Amino acid sequence: MEGKMTSSVKKKITRFLKLLLPILVTQVTLFAMSFFDTVMSGNYGPKDLAGVAIGVSVWVPISTGLTGILIAVTTLVANYNGAQQKEKIAPLITQGLYLALTVGVAIIIIGSFLINPVLDHMNLEKHVRTVAYHFLRALSFGIIPLFLYSVLRYFIDGIGRTRTTMIITVLSVPINVVLNYFLIFGNAGFPRLGGVGAGVASAITYWIILGLATYIVLTKQPFTSYRVLRTFSPISFSAWKTILKIGLPIGLSIFFEVSVFAVVTLLLSEFDTITIAAHTIAMNFASMLYMVPLSISMALTIAVGYEVGAKNFHSAKQYSIIGILMALLVASVFGLIIYLFRYDVAGIYTNDHTVQMMAGGFLIFAIFFQLFDAIAAPIQGALRGYKDVNITLLMMILAYWVVALPIGYFLATNTDWGAKGYWIGLISGLCFSAVTLFIRLNLLQKKKEETAAVAS
Image (tube, rainbow, N blue to C red; front, side):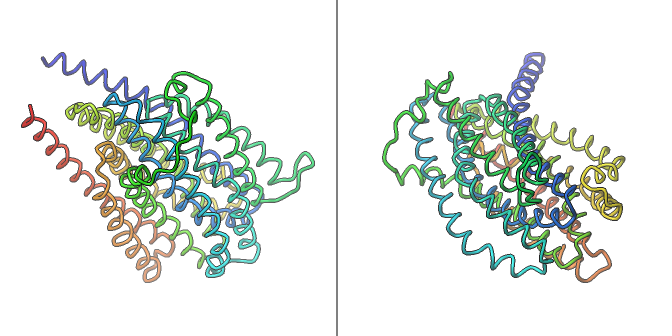
């Protein structure tokens, strides 16, 4: 019996890796757009780097929060797949696209009124503010395609074909880098736009990945068998309600988590440009490493969602354990790499020695980010697979807005820690979320197994 159980776990690890690796490549590649925007803007000049950082800090919480709402599509598709209810998937995707389009248009309209007031409230140098404003305006042309692509991507991932989204994304990154090269530095006869060119390049790239995803869904198996994008039924607010019931808590959880990092960057605008640039470098690199636990989280949503749909709660629990242990192992390796090579990492982003030294100091704190994220992120993904999203939302609000931000603000403004105080606050919030989410997952899994035992 023990041998069979060991064999079962090994098979699950193999299956999970097959599901995870394409998601990881996709997430790292998607993040590479932001990475290259930051690196190439930094090589153009510290002020353009700071301007792009401010622009990204305004945009990322909004985009990740709203696309987070659409993650419900992955959960629902995985559940339908596990329950052998394939016919429900195409209508779900149609309504998801309608919802994404509506949200995208609303964000463009609202953003056009709010960009200036938000930037006016920051103590920014004139050039930094100009770059941030025009970066955001350029990026706005990519909002609708990004949201529409997210729905198609979550459909593709939800049926377990994560390798396809990997291919789409990998193809798009060289295009983004080339466009950055032309538009940031004014090469090959293009206008020299500095940091603003990064926003233009990203917007164009979003249209390209939407086109690729649409082509694949319409022409390639097994996607054509689901008949997605073949017919467009009228808007169904009841279907929107189904998506939002799961997606809204997910989106808000992501928003409250990501926005606190953005608020910290905005609060750092009170410090000098060197500090903003150094913080941006450290946070950008930490965010790139976060793609591993985030990818594990997304893979767990699919794996756990499928098993929950099929009422295999023991298998769902096994996948959760596999994901968390895998994330912790990788985080330990990343922590060692950061400690040994932190100044070399900073040197990738900038040639300014002062910025490099300060960024190296910030990167020490990123080690603790890796460890706590390795627990919190996979658990969030597993909970989404169970459709357990409301308690997670409450935990995120408490972790980041009741614990992290107040502690960080107090340390930054009332002690000698200065900007580093914000990093200590963020680490405190991550620790709180890791502990509370771990408790929640354990309680939920025990309840599910007990219910299944009674039913049998």
